[in-house]
Image 1 (tube, helix red, strand yellow):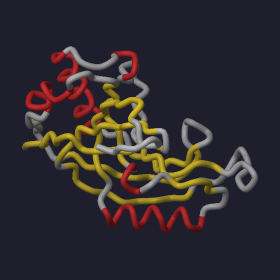
Image 2 (tube, rainbow, N blue to C red):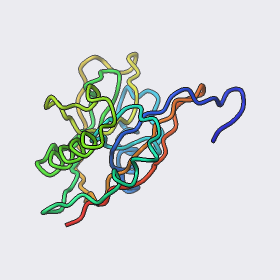
Image 3 (cartoon, rainbow, N blue to C red):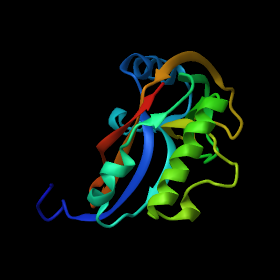
Image 4 (tube, rainbow, N blue to C red):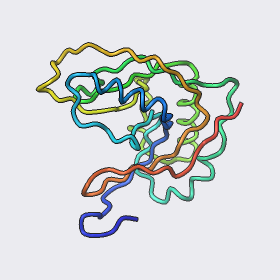
Length: 187
C-alpha cells in the first residue's frame, strides 16, 4: 500500500471489466497520434471495457471467491472496436465497442452475480439498458477540437477469455487500478 503524506487513500471502488490486449493498445495509440484535439491521455494501465460498476464494497475480500467463479457460456465472446470519437461524456475520447449479444449476456450474468451477493450500489450498475461498451482513451482539448469532430475508424477484434475484478483507488495524487481477481469465461 502507498504511504506518505501525499499518498493517503481516500476511497476505493470495485468494477468488473476486461483488459485491452497490448496489440490493440498500440493500434489505439497510433490512431490517437493523428487525431486532432486529443488532451491528456488515460494511462494504458487504466484502459479497459467496463461491464459493471459495483461501487464501494467494504470487506471485498470475503466476496472474491464467489465473485471469481467461472462464468459458463455457450459460445466465445469477442470485442470489436468500431471507431474513435467524442464520448458520451463529451470531454472524453472513446474507442467504441460493438454492442453484441455476447457482451450483453456477460454483463447481465455479472449483474445477477453481484445482486445475488448483495454487494454494490444498484444505482451505479447501468441496469436501464444504456450499456455503451467503450474504452476511455483521453480527454478533449477544446481549443484544438471543435464540438463536432469526425470519428476515426478502427476495426479490430479480440476474444474475451476473462473478466477482471478491478479496484479503483483514489489517492490525493490520482487514481490507481489493481486487479483483485479474474472471472474465467468457460465454454
